[in-house]
Amino acid sequence: MIFEDFIWRALLGGAGVASVSGPLGCFIVWRRMAYFGDSVAHSALLGVALGFFFGIDIRLGTLIACVSLALFLVLLQGQKRLSSDTILGILAHTALSVGLVTISFMESLRVDLIGYLLGDILSVTASDIGWIYGGGALALVWLALIWRSLLAVTVHEELARAEGIPVWAVRVSFMALIAFVIAIAMKIIGILLITSLLIIPAATARRFSRTPEQMAALAALFGGLAVLGGIMASLRWDTPSGPSVVVAAAALFAVSSMGGVVLGRAR
Amino acid sequence: MTARPSNEVLFGEGALIEGKGIGHAFEKNSVLSGVDISVSPGEIVTLIGPNGAGKTTLVRVLLGLLRPDSGEVVRRPGLVVGYLPQQLAIDPVLPMTVRRLLRLTNRPGPGEMTEALAETGAAHLIDRAVQDLSGGELQRVLLARALARRPDLLVLDEPIQGIDISGQTELYELIARIRSLRGCGVLMISHDLHIVMASTDRVVCINRYLCCSGHPETVSRHPEYMAMFAPHDARTLAVYTHDHDHSHDLAGHVVPIGNGEHASPGSPDHAHDNSSHEHDNEHPEDEDGHDASSGGGAHPGPGRAPTGGEAF
Image 1 (tube, rainbow over the protein chains, first blue to last red):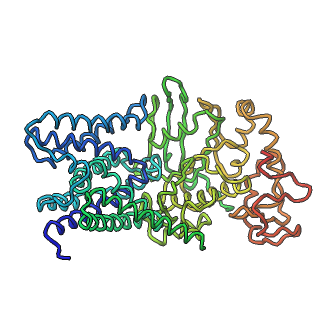
Image 2 (image 1 turned 120 degrees about the vertical axis):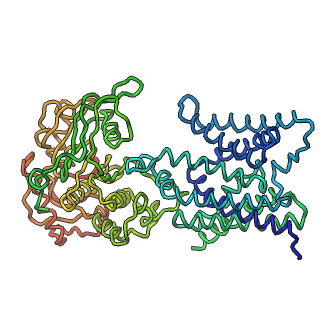
Image 3 (image 1 turned 45 degrees about the vertical axis):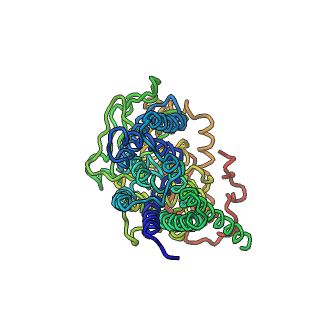
């Protein structure tokens, strides 16, 4: 098979996203924040609409929308009247709907809605790759800097605070990082499916890991394999790229789980 | 173990941490008012009181986790705290070995880690997954984790939770030993004075306000304490002080003591019995035929008071 430029770009972009989403996804799994990730991702469409409306780079619009929503959630979680999953439920679908309504108001605009919702890895441009690698490298450095503190906070928040870790700053920084990575990865995997690329590789990696760091590295590896498999399948059978990547990730998870069960029985 | 440092002699400096007139209220319900407490280097201070007395709230205020509504907390500058929270269960989805847990909030070298684990009798657990540990093993590992920080102050919130009654005494003796070895201050919460008595220097009894404080023997006879815990506690106290016919190793196994003298009930010399424990632990041979590897429960000797959890 001769690889054309756009395939190389798709593979490069996918690998870049997977290497960040794997380690970050581990924390989403450990801290039970899947719904938070979903809510932030849903606001990305609002960012797309705002990007068009104000004539700024769509990726920048998405970034602003995601990070704002994440910080807004941090503020709202401070109140006690409503549980945090209720707040997430309200914001997630409100943000998505406001995004859709705003886009429908802009009549002159032709937007590839399905592309944003489900991802369009094969239309990744050279500037997208630059965006993904630049942003991805920044996100990895950012995560590496807060890694130890964030892990301590994840194990026991009060213990971390009693022993001198700035818990609030670490938490806010982590939420902003999730928003940042979602904004970067949206083009490849799509608003509706992004959480799965965070969670499924991490869940697959758990079985094979003894330390948090091993799990993070394996999650990046499994995420990369899923992206590779998904893109190949998408080319071969002309399927949409985002869902294909997710199906590949889920297949990896299923195989490793069944393998684990069989090995467990044999022991 | 025979050396019990006197704070005034060995440590001339002031308190590591001090709370003055601490008061706190949740939603206008006062849980603490006007409580004074301090911990000096090399001193074990035990906080006791009934459920809902505000023990955990007070500790959280001292640790800086909660801002007091009144009063102030003074910490010695640069104070390093090692903390054992009440409940620390690590979710199975987070892979974690003992080795990794020891490096959670600081970076001890391999030597320091082994040393801390050896000190709490958990050296063999270093490569185990934290989720596979028993309650007692986990407490020992968490204690080692706190020690690997080289703390000036150890804070333990009900450290004996999830540990059977025989292991509880053992753990308190371990804490006393660590204090003697390292000279750090210890602040712990307990709700049964009779078990901590032997390994505590000062007891602070609170019930939303400061009831009484002082030497454990004094507090145990204090009218306010008696009103709160007696007559139940007066009885169990007697049972406990009689009960020195055997000890328990780190796994909770029975390790008999030869013909060590036993303290009379309520004897002020009670604390010194620890030295005979320590000595006799090195000679596990036993005339009663108890062997160190038999079972994990308590094995009362013939004619002795039972030590099982039911007794308490």
